[in-house]
Amino acid sequence: MIRTPSVPRALLPLTAAAGLLLTTACGGGGSGGGGGSADGAGGGAADVKVAMASGGKATGAAPGAPITLKVTSGDGSLADVTVTDQRGRRLDGKLSADGRSWTSVSGTRPASTYKAGYTAKGEGGGKRSGSGTVTTAAPEKPNKLELTPGNGSTVGVAQPVSLLFDHPVTDAERAEVERNLRVETSPRTEGSWGWVKDLGGNDRIDWRPKDFWKPGTKVALKGNLAGLPSGQGRFFARDYAMGFTVGENRVVTVDAARHRMSVAEDGKEVASYPISAGSDTYPTRGGTHVVLTKNAHETMKSASVGLGDAYPSLPTTSVVHLTSSGTFIHAADWNADVMGSANSSHGCVGMLSGDAKKLFDRIRVGDPVVVKNTKNAEVTAPGNGFGAWQLDWPAWKSRSALKG
Image (cartoon, rainbow, N blue to C red):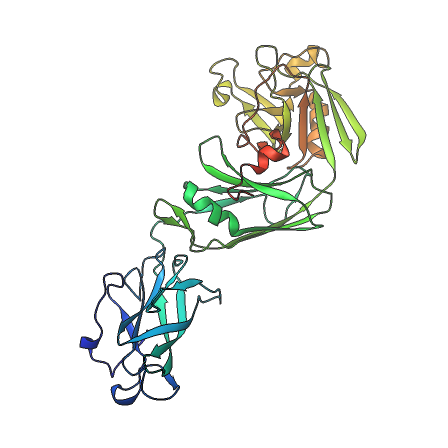
């Protein structure tokens, strides 16, 4: 707090913009000093008094409002204003045309302490330095997020960096959120953020490289989000960080017309299996999918993927999830008689259980699965699973809030 024991309250008028002000006197001579040191000849700065506040308060201020320093009395002006938070991050601002106020360009973050150093100049040329402090309250309505992949994990070459938000991020806030997200890679990799909606309608932002990752790439995310607004009165309560490593260059290709799956590593085929893809009524989704999760045992339920009672509950094994809407690779011995010769599933890629287990043990989360020669012409939405690869590079970059 800024204390001014020698300055009467009557000398500290309230202003419409400042509200309740916590004030520091910058003066010399007969008025006494309140937190400043004189610099310059004469007493020209004696009657200059400065107040600092955010949103009308200096303690417990609501986050999001800019910080303002004002000359509240005396014929003088401000100069050399510097405001930093508790981490040493500078808050940029602008002086008014008459020099009697300074306002930060951006708003304050929640649960933060801002310190200002400044110089007040009097009409007679005298100067006095001063300082002040503003503290902001913790956010009442935080916006939290979930990071993918897991910190310290090893993933496939198609895995994006993904942040799923608990609450919407409004269009007005997206660019600033994106500016405060940094992806660091070794070796250096070109990529872009893109905003999508997941299958439940939640906001998500994914970062994918222009092309598949180079094996062995180290990836780190730093999200300096603490205190940033996300819209609708919500703020991010903390910063986020995580890192992962890219594993082998493995690509799975499903050829629906040939009823065949191949697995390539470093461009060379290492395995091939007969499959039964989606029927003509329920053709398998085409394009490049990303392995989301793997479950050793799972029960397939038609109702859970929007197909009502199209088929009964089917326990199965070696399940690999490709989309949130219900495209899987899994063991399907009930279709053994058509495996490798016909497509008869409800959209999934079925395999003999022994082959499915071999694939399950080999692939990892983040591996790309390319489905080609399917009769399904529907383009999977980029937020349905990790569908960023469903779009070409210019289309993906256009989803960034930072244009140009």
